[in-house]
Length: 305
Image (cartoon, rainbow, N blue to C red; front, side, top):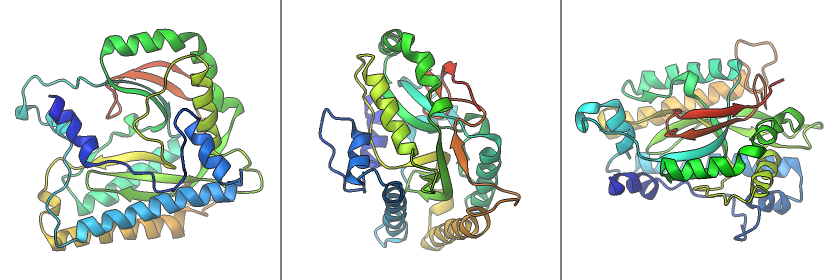
């Protein structure tokens, strides 16, 4: 099973395209803030550049004459199609802090899913009740006993950590479909208006620092300027087997992103609203277990506003 687990991250590494130099041992989120001289417009720009650069990078892969195949998640495949390996169970236990989308963002995400599925009918869709944005990954791919030990270590601090968004409010805007050879997501950038001196990246920095004070070592897989909700993953090659259908897939994503930019980004009273203040409806959710696809067990949910 080890080789199956390793294949996902090895083949689909989420690169940091911000070009920010992170020094080992220091708060990685603070490094980006300092590189931007704490200017919110520059922080937003780095998030925007990261997702645009990555989309272009992935587009080239989809349309390349050397395209070979999509990257299928072998764990999700076994969970969704039990006949592949009867009795299989995901062994990867994690400990995370999630930001749950409010109802209006779930409505938007569900609509985007329906648009994408028209172009890729076999796309596995993340159920809306499982949608989340990982604000901080404390540990991943560990045993249940290892996670239990980490939970015990941070338990006294869990209430203050989960409620951090009640007093530290960060706004996300400009939703856009991001994608690669394994999945699609709805990504946001930190707002940069006159009243947005405290961004989502500041929130991640402060959460990292607060967890660090508990004495627990933080083992995130990656630290990149991205704020995203997974929308779907590929379970087979059927919808993308030929160059023409891959071209149609890219075109469909571009059309959805055009719609988001023109109809949702600056919408005040439209059907869909793309602005999200993290902590709306509920605070951060501290969650542990086999939660790669929205599962796991909730330890605490912070107070919303």
